[in-house]
Image (cartoon, rainbow, N blue to C red; front, top):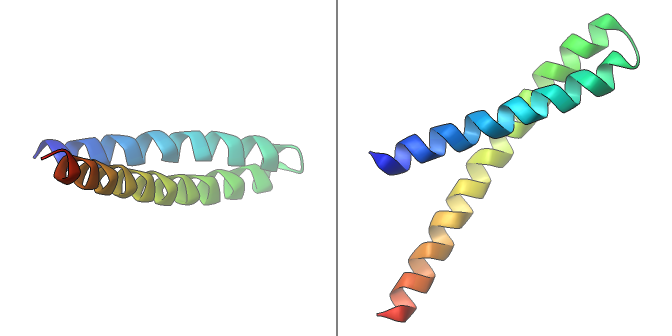
Amino acid sequence: MRDRFNTAVTRAKYAAIGAAVGAAVGGLLSRNAASTGGGVGALAGATIGEKRTEATELVEKVTGSDAD
């Protein structure tokens, strides 16, 4: 249960950061581009957060197995 919660929180954190960056970059062009950039940035951020969490869990499994 805790792993699922950590994954969800990490995904949400990266999605929020991605949305902010995407909206800022899109806002330099126009209001519509800011909206689109926010959506695309959130999607990219959520994907990065998901992959990063999976990679961290894999590294912990590998290092935990070697230590035993």
